[in-house]
Image (cartoon, rainbow, N blue to C red; front, side):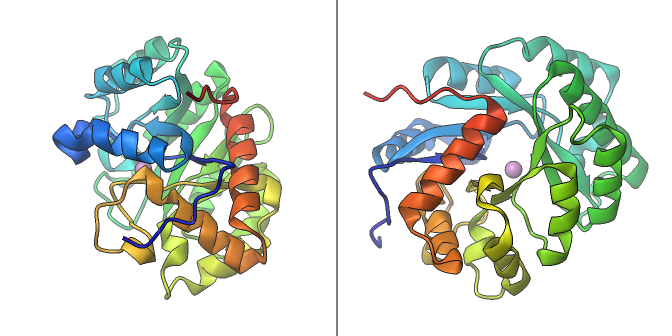
Length: 270
Ligand code: NI
């Protein structure tokens, strides 16, 4: 493998699905490898509500892994009052730092439009009530997602991040208005992601997060492999190249921003 561009400063993977569903028995090794490569903290967000117990268990055993609880737009048709009650109840756990991932996905449309909107709005309200940031998945749904976030109080108590950002420069003014963060994934390293790369050049440095969204979307240098948190360095490397900055600087700023958004402490390192 090509050597990772890692730096002593450390990095945070702000969105990593390190669960058995995706990594099976290798899950703990993947976590350890990431820590060995300078990933100092990570946020592991829920997609379904059937593995909340597993997420809590991971967070309990690993001081530097935090979790978020939510229902993905693909599963939105399954949203009920029980879903909301479960997230609310479990969110009193000290390692639960956000609501999500949730949002709108009109590319796959695995759940119908109205179910997605209902499920997303409910989680926006929950996030606001719990005073936790929301992790937004948005695909082919920009205007509607922006409108919903605005109506639900973005910038006025509702905080959050557009995770795995796939938009272009034209989406940034609205995101700035909402006062949301922008999280870049391995997609920014793909040669054909020109609009996204243009956006990456102009997002204010105090709004940038980096993530892998593993096991999906391995960065270009390891494309075709299963993605894992250690490869978040390649995302920072690409952002540094696009912005005329250094990997160290991007990793540091993104870590500061992630800690501010999710209220994470400075990590405990052995
Ligand atoms: Ni995700």
